[in-house]
Image (tube, rainbow, N blue to C red; front, side):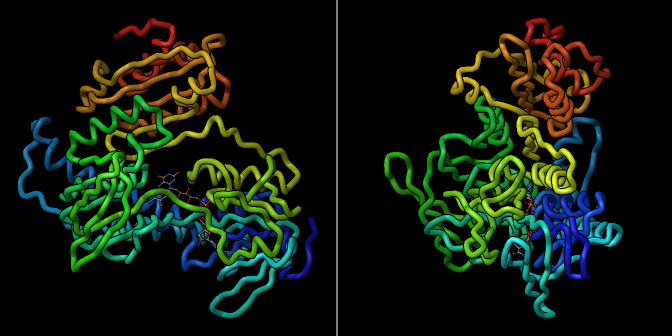
Amino acid sequence: MTQGSEDRYDVVVIGSGPGGYVCAIRAAQLGLKTACVEKDATLGGTCLNVGCIPSKALLESSERYEMVRHELDAHGVKVGGVELDLPTMLARKDRIVDELTGGVEMLFKKNKIHWARGTGRIQDAGTVVVSGASGEEVLRTDAIVIATGSSPAPLRGVAFDGERVVTSTEALSFAEVPKHLIVVGAGVIGLELGSVWRRLGAEVTVVEYLDRILPGVDGEIAKEAQRLFTKQGIRFVLGAAVQAADVAGDQVTVRYADREGGTHTIEGDRVLVAIGRRPHTEGLGCEAAGVALDERGRVVVDDHFETSVPGVYAIGDVIRGPMLAHKAEDEGIALAELLAGEHGHLNYDAIPSIVYTHPEVASVGRTEEELKAEGIAYNKGRYKYGPNGRAKALGEAEGLVKFLADAETDRILGCHILGARAGDLIAEVAVAVEFGASAEDIARSVHAHPTLSEVVREAALDVGRRALHK
Ligand code: FAD
């Protein structure tokens, strides 16, 4: 790659989310002169500012609040006078976000990455024009990386007003606990934020178009999760097509049609629309530059993340694949390595996916429904949290681990966990999948006692019908 005048780069990354900022750091580590364009006031993108991090901060705080109010009694711990201090809870979340976004800025300085502040537009394969508060900056480069992420998908007939009818961004900062929060969409974001506000005292109704929650998650696991969330007090209305959300004062009426065409209404004081996210390419100049988009508006890339225009690449939420921060990060690393002449690679079969509700839902690989649809013969092992000693000590006896292994080779095809700390437990299985391991490999590995990881091992043993404590 060429080194030239001050404004000439080897790589210009547009967008500083987990895809973009990690790609920029890895490129700089590999000696490439790198700039990253970001239009927002802070680095870190959706994930750090209004996604993964603030939602997890609130999930953690609200879980502690719920635990102190409802679960400590059983441990023989009496606590009185418990009160919610929502401003402090929100300020803590904001502080965590500030620390992390500031941390990325420091990493940029350390790695000598130029932060071009403003909105980036691709002028041609070698030029990005950045429009910012202080005017225009022209960046000439050998490689352009589109890492512009995604934004909340709107729902036809429902207008966001930022106050009563909102996206996940506003739902991370409600100044008071809603009385009745109506969540449209029973996906990851809807269930996580619905859980936060239910724990803090809101009545929560989740309205979902499909006949199930958590699309994409293994059906058996999703069904059991719905049972547990219902037990916690979340109300589900499934098979419901939301048609309108009408605001009158501080009330919102959500209208939906059921499968038979009957129309119904629900009254609430806040509506969170969380029906998915769409790739963000507005104003990027894709069309003029000849960068092809698919029918869903995603940037089309080949196996090496190159778009239809040579020298222009794309990663993260803006391309195909699951919209997950770690997927974006690993694509960023792989691409930077490819640009530096190394062998970057990402195994899409080994990407874990986690829902941070309580209990958590975690998975890697294929679901049972997918294996059936593909006609792949498999063996199944299941083990519940209930008999596990550590689960009992934690008071976390609800949950299960399910392994799906190739019927002939025993290679792990999928693993699905519903239960406490599922998000941590799945890491072992993701590594196993990456190494092409079998269920037997997990079953023969020593797992510390007493830990929840023994549930994973028992489920792996159960693939061969030899779980010990079943
Ligand atoms: P983004 O993070 O969206 O970043 C794109 C950046 O590009 C933004 O900063 C944007 O301002 C900038 N940009 C866009 N256009 C331009 C332009 N023309 N010029 C300059 N800058 C531009 N994922 C997980 O893995 N785990 C979770 O727990 C999780 N929780 C989530 C919770 C919520 C509430 C939400 C909304 C999302 C969550 N996600 C989670 C998804 C995760 O945030 C995304 O998958 C991830 O942020 C995608 O990274 P990205 O780099 O592709 O894009």
